[in-house]
Image 1 (cartoon, rainbow, N blue to C red):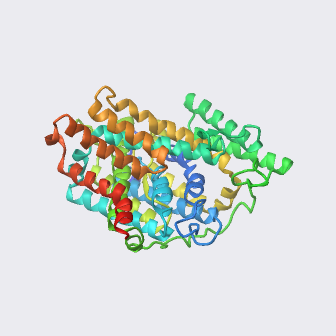
Image 2 (cartoon, helix red, strand yellow; image 1 turned 30 degrees about the horizontal axis):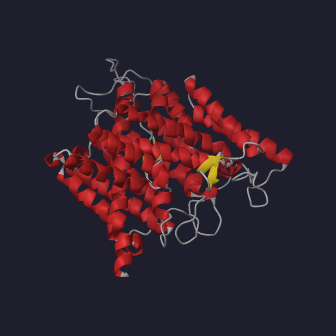
Image 3 (tube, rainbow, N blue to C red; image 1 turned 90 degrees about the vertical axis):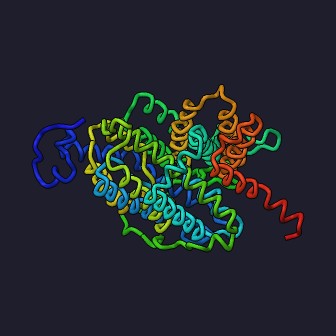
Length: 478
């Protein structure tokens, strides 16, 4: 929606605030709403990428123990810079931060590979971001977009949602490994599980009632409960002699501290080539590219539609600028060692509150920069308090399956394999590979080889090599 109201100053003219039927006050409020709706990432990103060791046994930032405060500071810094850049360059009410799902790919499908370091993994992110930037600038993105069938793109997002859900449930102890049934219900008679359940129920209720910031509110309430329980019951951390403890017990180390940005620049651009090989590297980069690129396309169209900013062809204004900034977000995320930064669909919260311009994104970015001062508070949030957010976000991502025609076996079967193999193998790359190969097999079985884009043939062949390279090495004794 636009307005004929005359601009009221330089800020109004630059961001076209009056033209889009908004006000400076509305944009500031919308930007803050977006920040509170997505600020949970400052808590969740460190818990996802900071609590798992790399292929050499080291945690992000070096050392044999997590440093969540340092990761939180860098996460907020990069999110702040990229959100401001999106607002200033693209003038679109779209904020950015480390992408959920993408950080899971980095943690479990890249950094966890034998011999791979966190610096190597972040180097892969930089490479992926540079490739996306080239695709955007050359127009090749349309070719890639056409090559991958829409149902498979949808299935990738849904599968990542299911994978994130499993991670949240498992790390909270709600589900656990079981020799007889593979997975089983955890011990529900512990205080940490109560924290998780309270957080999850609250998140569900608030989301069902369309409360803005439902995820953040649930995290804060569950954290408060965890702090009370820890200080009265002295539960401690989960261990062999304390199976009912917290995965990461709440620890108070202050409120405000000078931000630690030492993670910035801790990436190795080509180290992954030596440690995992060029074929695996190509597949991992392609996996990240798909998850990042197509998710951004969908997010900017969804937000543009909510804000009434789409043209007759369904495209948002300044599409190229949006995509350029988003691709730079991947590069910045790798350089900052916090995983790929991407567009956040939670920006719709600010849009729903009236935001229509990039000024809202600038406000969101400033709020993220200010939050770097409060990184020590991250140590107060146990995984059990943050895990409900993973479950709820997983649900939101899984709702995309409604866009798949489940009666058409040519797309339904590959989509199904993509979705279920991700969590069952604990590998996003395996799920995408299985889906791509199944798509080609089903098309061939139906005599429709001509319907397969040449890029799908190429990627399918790479995934076949990806799945068989270890058996081949074993056979030849390599």
